Image (cartoon, rainbow, N blue to C red; front, side, top):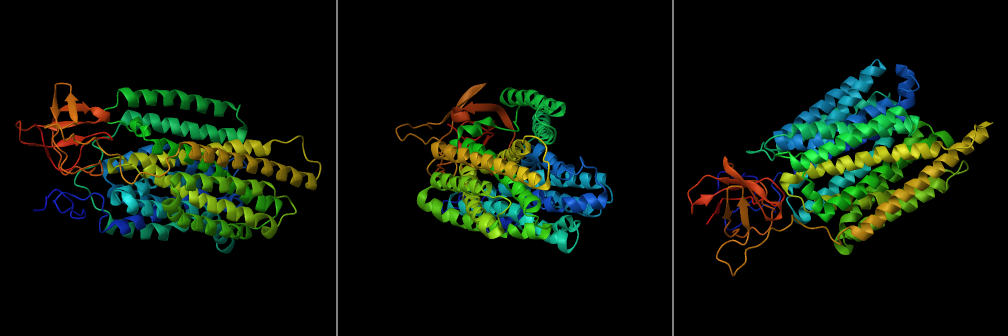
Length: 574
């Protein structure tokens, strides 16, 4: 007989228990919705870059205000990423996806119709808010729809390919739309994407019977938002005014203080912490987040300075500069498609380190360009080398980050990965802007000015290559050879003992959970039922949860709240 509490979208095993390793029938539609949301989020990071001169002349931006067309998006986006992931776990992925897409569409229309700089900046902030909800959610819904194994690896690979190619596509699309139509269409282009995403999400995502998160950690949310926002603002101010600027120093100081308070709160006081730092015990999680920090720094800065080189040194038009990124887009897609096959043969560590090494080589080749370079003899080769490397490392690193995550960790892991990439991008851009601006004296002629630009961009590209090389070294030394296919197994029952080997001790007593009935790992993460607990329990391996009121020897439900929690159908306590 089928358990009525098990979703009909979840396949069951021959013994009647839910098979959490098999994707649901709607899984591929969920993947499509996730990719649509992700491509829109990453597209809007770069799509406005080549349109900035047209925006400035049309809306009358002051010289220091134009950068806020980009900063308003990245600041709100980065500051609210962790909240976005956990909020989706609280209200449900379907509701969060629909509201996030709708908000992105409304903000895009307002931005496209903007008549003043303030209106456009506010609309970009609205896009950043929606992006902070959609970015972690787009990966989280994949992790739930594809619980583990090869199916999850393939799905995450497709998502990462879309994410990697979206940034390059944004530069290309921004140039085309600005030259052929108007800068306003770099915002209006989101409207049909939103409509498609809403349609697919509406039919594919289902409202869960129980939320993955019971309540939101409000103090932790406020502290994390202030910390990340202050850090991002400090990096923006440092890039524009220098690292010693009072605005940058003040922002960094706020970030340090609130960051320390946030960590103390999460470790000691939070009942349901926003960030369970226990996830970093998993090597794949901390390695992937550290690597993606450097990937974000390298890719964001690389796109930025490559675009500037084409327009300021080679004097390309926005359309021509955008078209020059087409090989980069195709190379990224190629590298992403190859990543899964190579990972199966060579292992995650080898593919990740190789991709990062190719990225370092490509950025070094970019640094060798000068004012005599052309697209064919200067820009094409480094674009191909770097883009294939980006495709390889983005897919393999995302797979590494999500390989050992259960569904109740989906929002958290997704938020951490996206936040690390966003902070890395802001940090890299701030550092490399300062590096590129370092020069000796003022240019005395146009030729000297061009040479000064070339020298600055050369330094920036070489430092970007160093970022990739450091990430490659981290991957080679610390990444596991192969990513785990499914969450970490729970301790198994000892055959020599009549009672469970997995004892759980609470503040008012102790219980033992009997045999896990064939559930060998924490892949069965969604509880079939919920009930009010009598008292909290804490067990081996960080297991926490609540024992449900029932007579001794009858069936109990164990509802866990941490990475090692026991989920699934009720167990017998003895």
